[in-house]
Length: 183
View 1: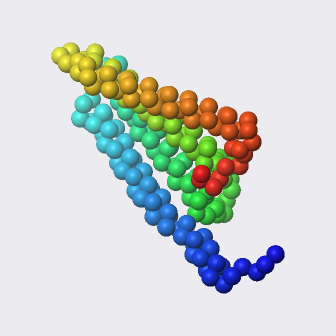
View 2: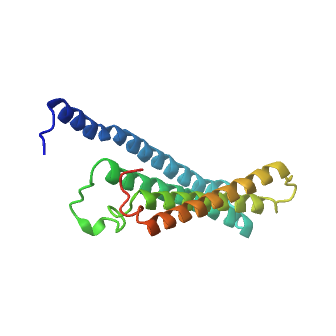
View 3: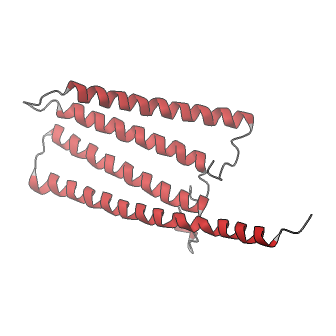
């Protein structure tokens, strides 16, 4: 094996170090997580102190909103941890007892599946919240909006099924094993 040319070593070292340019994106997602938390707290405050209504429909709508926000927060955490570990650096936790079991094991394909699953769940919850709001007296039905929401929900669902099918076919052919390079 021939020694690598001097310039090639520096180019490759620079490219390898360039992965750190992704780190600010993950820090930005942590700020988005803080915004989701603020929104969650605001929704709780509104539910308990402003619109204190204990009728079942209102409680269900508030619950769906809180579930929606928690799913989005879980999704952000999955993207931050798995993206950072797959593309930047391993996260060194001194006490492994508190380390989530999926950290370090979720590859790019797994992140895609969790992403589309969360998007579908969030879409379904938004659709359900919209349908629940239709039971309110005096609520006008916006047919075009409902049609678009249904179409978008089915598009997300079909995309998830297609991604799962592609991953399954890839695993059958042996090309999907240990996919951690982001391609």
